[in-house]
Image (cartoon, rainbow, N blue to C red; front, side, top):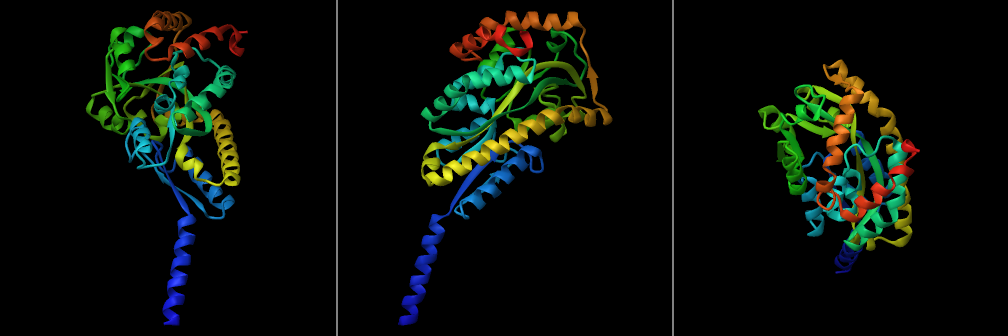
Length: 330
């Protein structure tokens, strides 16, 4: 009888110990083996160390739980707890993250740092009001046009079938109104879309194109900064609030430190990704000054369509007012 009592006591004690452990399920579109995945893996390892094993991270890579909008929806219903997402998914967390969707506005890393730092307080607080804690916020590279056939001017792009994010109906409508041909797809379906010819043009950072081997089909890159892709690691605020406060501080610092390190490395490695793809046949096409001005002209003509539709009206106005203050324009 004594043995039974002891066994039951040990079993219940073990259950209590196990109950203290929290497994945080986090999703990302980044494939396993990429630097962005490695960032999450390192963060999870360091979280486990500073929380004495009480917090563990389980990563779902490569879009296995769906596109970024799917991730946010699944966080809200409790199927997963967090995600490493780009600005596309972040707009579901806080519409102000659309600040980086103004084409050709940012032309230097100093520009994006200046604007993001100016908006940071509102970006973070807005996310918290919607139930999300932002652990770190970084950029993941300049966005360029990758196409199957070479393009130099807007009319060249109008002949292509452009990838747009599934569920982002406003951007799709914007492209269509401006005379372009947009095709909405979930990111996990991009590769098959390229293979079948459903799409043949897309705007992504080179590192993402290299990691997913898209350049085998979209073998032409327009050497013109179209935009900057901002990303963040977010977690359900309810889950975050269940973590001990002394752990929160340590975990937040780890996430921020790793994010900053990743951003620095990413900025240095962006050109290397292009060089690697060039070795395997990528053609980099440089537009003339006149051709760039043609792009700038059509982008500015689209501002009335962008403001309040693709980009939150209030944040659009704030960012445009910063134009003369940007480091690249001083």
